[in-house]
Image 1 (cartoon, each protein chain N blue to C red):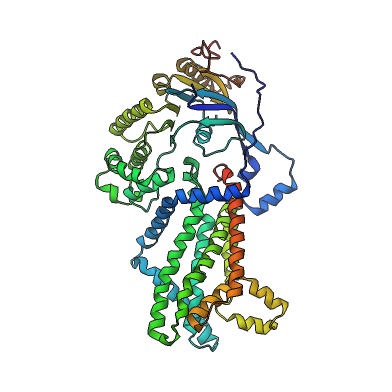
Image 2 (tube, one colour; image 1 turned 180 degrees about the horizontal axis):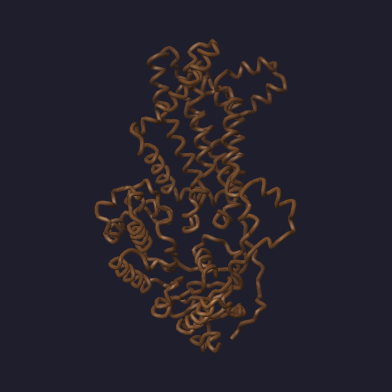
Length: 287
Length: 278
């Protein structure tokens, strides 16, 4: 019988597909598992409303309460004057809630599914994707009080520009999904990301023109200066200003900045998917 | 004939640095003292075997021998670091039961979720739904959230889902002792049924009766190596002798690894275990 202690070990060279192949392969896998994504999203939505008295009403109440806190803080305590200030900040709080809750969930979405990852072979990328898709529901529910507010208190601000809301939201969705995919994979190796994310998100929020207008910053640092250019590179400058134009000011979105964010988001998504796929084989060993 | 499972000099390595290091701080520390201590650990090495269609292989061995790792590689959950494996056909793995359950969802929703995780067609899963529910025998509880289930009920549902699909290659890990006596009898019958239908089976078990009664071949794994292979009765005998020594507080001599057993391929004396004489 052949049993030598010195085995013939063919060097194992995993055949790594090229970047393009990885991308198309991932797209195909995600498409074939679209139902899994649907289930995960539905399960998530069901769970969120399940244990509370008001159930899914919280989706609507939550952004309203956040807005109230800021309105009290900024327009009453700090006495900042701005027309229709509740609407002004609500147009930024809604998309921000969508973004920040998606990223916060994405950070833990792989590590909390450790058991299934060790037991079943499935494309792990569906997990951050499901989180990102689920976050859209967050935004859509939040639109209910937004439109309620518009109709009841600011009917004169409604213009046809509001119909472009999905376009801006799509850009934000692509940005969210890229960051979500990247963050979920990195957290497997660096658990610190969960802690970092909470603070990074908070700082990012205050750096973005949510509670104030972008023009206040650009005026302060000087229009056209380097600082103002750097400031405008924050994707949430483009996003918040665009949302605000559509809903609050009745103007077109900031097309040039928005296009830049779109390009950046697509590049980020490509990089994120490649990084994720590269790390994916180690997930079952590391978590 | 093409084997259902073909494993050649398989090695799976765990990077100790990666698995231990979970924070950025420790990553920096790791960088500072790069070359100290073993950096990896071979959970499996030089494992070769073939399972032809219609055969069933029992994998036995002490805890930590790499049995579960072997199943994880066969199921495609882990990638080999060395060697290669080929599995021909649809694999179903009955590893830990109920792994993918979401405690907040109802049993019914969890059936669909588990099916989606396993990559089973939605229509297929709907068609099997009634059968799964009937087999799990949870009564009204099927519409209650899983968190209200007892651990036995949980395992029953997990078992029903995992065995609902007839696979070509069935991987079983310690799932035979589930639930109360009635369900255990029922699940054993179901496993036997699947074993008859499946093209190949790999069964990891601590129950030596299963190995000798239902498998035509056995592998003994110790510390990631195959140390005995062949006829189940003989391999089990080696394993039991060595377990006996361990219980007595002795460390049995380390058996040299069998690096290519070729247990089933063109071995006229395949039934003789490699080390039956020891």
